[in-house]
Length: 528
Image 1 (cartoon, rainbow, N blue to C red):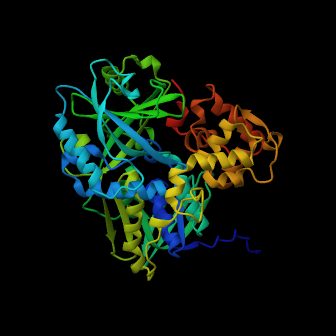
Image 2 (cartoon, one colour; image 1 turned 30 degrees about the vertical axis):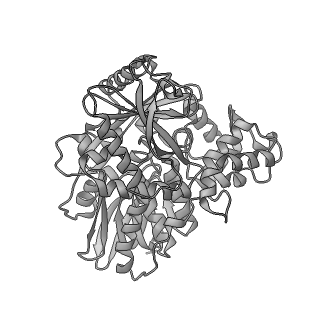
Image 3 (cartoon, rainbow, N blue to C red; image 1 turned 90 degrees about the horizontal axis):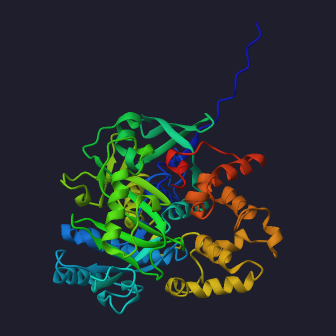
């Protein structure tokens, strides 16, 4: 009898570290580990930054309100990181001044002044000015507010494009040798002595076998579920899922400052200039027990944010004025706090060494992701026989080396000069479009525009300001596969384009033979 031929068994991927989770912590750990010479595979079940890491308030901040909970160590750590991050990626992060109006019945003025004094002095500042009192009757920030708000305070923090921050970390990891697998779920994980055997399932059903010396569980809201159901490991730590929601409305003020508002219930909410034409208002803190992949803002949250805005701004808004909204689940480290807004934003790393090492990440916030990643790799590297030291504190993320090799402070302070130079070099591009490229891609804008000398060479203009050349760049270099990736995570162009743009772009991609995937529920609701 003739023997039946069999399909050859694919050779498993071999790596030092398998990172599960493509949010900010997973991408940051992959970058740090790859930069120390460890071989890395990262898998993410959806798109990079598809959930929590693209649903933040978009701030690099110490957390002024955390001082009330005596979290001085966390605030100091975050304040130090604030300037480190600004230097690393001045194209997607920049300084932002915050105005806090003051009214009777709120936190007393002396307490606010004390808090801001601590905020200014808990860590060294080189890039950001300090706080001061403000006469809102004489400052531009007072004009949009109701007349009753005559006094206030102003202090500094930073803005970040959160989803792009994740992508840049993944790019940096890949450029140092890491293999990044998006739309790829880790469906099984088995310890075999001092090694892990993992099965990764891609969106098309294809299975990838991985043998890893160490696994990092950076699954965010799914960290505990992954431990119990996939890795079959018990842990004494847990996360508390807290939903944070935001709304976007037409621009409520003309200046470039943001606001921090105190609500009578003790909550803090921001109103931030957003995408040139809009104002971003958030966030809420609501206990969440549903499916973390299907989180959505509630009518009650929309009403709450509108009411808070109307408490301060002269121009009222209603739920009907909300152009877009988003919600995300923050996997906060469980600390038994009664109030969701009081739950710590700090993190803990849990290293299980009952055989091959398994490191799980509990909690965290965007501002401290780099330090978390550094500490995580400091824990696993010696176990893997790697003695290279930390390196990311002085390194730029892709596109952040605007004036290399000159001091990075120059990149933060002279970003407008970089834009001017770019406009001189590519004078054939509309200035507003080049400004957007500068902000999104930094020095990598040269890679996007390489070999082009006129607008016609950018390819088809799919929508106003979105050319085929940019889409191709995102597909090739940033793991974009569908319209939601391009319009809502790699950019926020979906806010500027007409309703239905996702379907048009997905059809355009399909016509060119580009891969398209089913949109996640939260990406389908493009506008209200």
